[in-house]
Length: 440
Image (cartoon, rainbow, N blue to C red; front, side):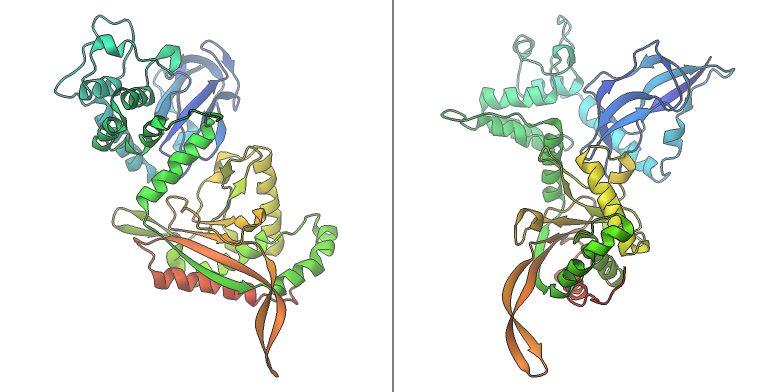
């Protein structure tokens, strides 16, 4: 019998770990090629992991709710064959080679942060309860003896005490500052310490307490991480988009008849963004330490609201290679998949720039948070009729025009006001100069 290692795949450029939601197969079950073995979740998408081979599931390495770094062996599948040495899953073998150092660094960082033993260690020799090294580390730092540790309620598998349980307990035991002091000394855990500190909020009175769902928790962590990572600056412009509104109104009926698709404003906005990125490629980048990584591909993420109220960002790959019809088809396809929760992992990763349409909700402008590891995000507001000054050959006149605000949030570490402001103005220029004679 040969053995094949099923490895946690890389789910996106900034994703270094995933949570196991459910094992659809048990040890001893027969598995067909490409049959789902387990379901996982990241801060971007839920996904099913298929088997790279046909065989029998011989070993499961992690329980449900475990957070596993990418590149880690999560199961062993026994197959018919002569070789007895495990071989990596083909799905992982296809992952970009440049990701390996980042994976190793992440695993090393997690290991050093959770395995490091403090000068005073809580002894659990007489306990029948399992405590992870990180939990014991927190207990030692806060002076929690074994007898007290035994009374801490656990929310993990089989009642296991997790880091979240410990931080919440410490916050209630001695006040939030104690929990924050531990988080500050542990760089891996710091971004997730904030929810624990919030447990001291007074919830008495006429209130309803609603526990965040898993996706909302992940989004919250991602948003806080972005604000901690990038110094945000937001610039605004107002654009006269009368020409493009009139063009869309004149072609939308014919567009449906010719292409079977409803044309919205989103593909028009994306087309202008792509043109402006070609003029100012510095906004199509990411940051790695002190290095700026300019992306040659233009992959536009479009923020989409889910029926649950959560947010997801499907990505239009190589948007610069698509015409208006192609952009419209792709926008509609991804939006439909997002609403029905059918997006594949590849469709929410690899974005280099993000567009969010706050005008969908009637908002005139917004200050969006950068979608890490990108360096800029554009928000487009509602299009409204307003009186505006129009220059004519006979002089300036006041006319009713279709106007909208655009706002660009950018990472001031690498995008200065000149670049951010110039790029934003160029997007507005392309929208204002839209060709009303453009054919579909």
